[in-house]
Length: 210
Image (cartoon, rainbow, N blue to C red; front, side, top):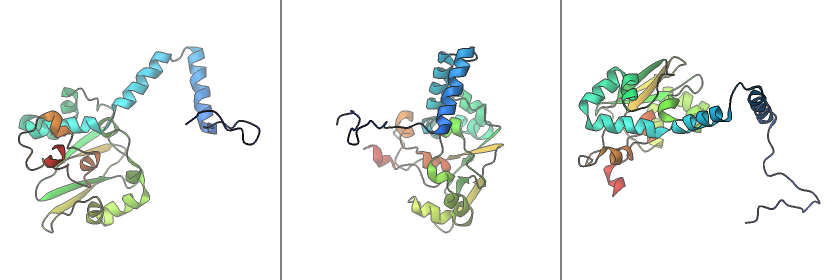
């Protein structure tokens, strides 16, 4: 497909018109560069840092916890230290809590006020996590939400909902899938989804990798 602009009306139309706020951001950036407050390298380093923050970080933590009981204990008791061991920077999180799922207890995370989220561990929050619908229903009907994500806990399983705040962030440690005993960390990490670390569903089945 050609990238040439349309001339159907006798003049060109830009494909992406910057918003007022985007133009302000670029203007501020250019001014900071001009004044020497920041450099192009500073900007690139920050971009790379932001891009490195993704659910892959959380998946690495979970996979290591599944294969190393001592690490799992450290992850639960001192999450920031455990993150540092894996070269994951969680220093910006004031208080970080890891919630371990069991056969009898499932944890689910929400932020009822806005969209507080462990970004260094999981990257950007999904749109549904920020929606008013999820924020309300997570408290009133957590099992209903889980069902929509394909998880149907039995009646004897307790579902606990945890409300994130500006001071505290949560990470759910999902159950290790059955039949994954022969998998290495890298393979196990592929079974750990963002949604399973929020707690709305379980990790992927081991058969996914076959």
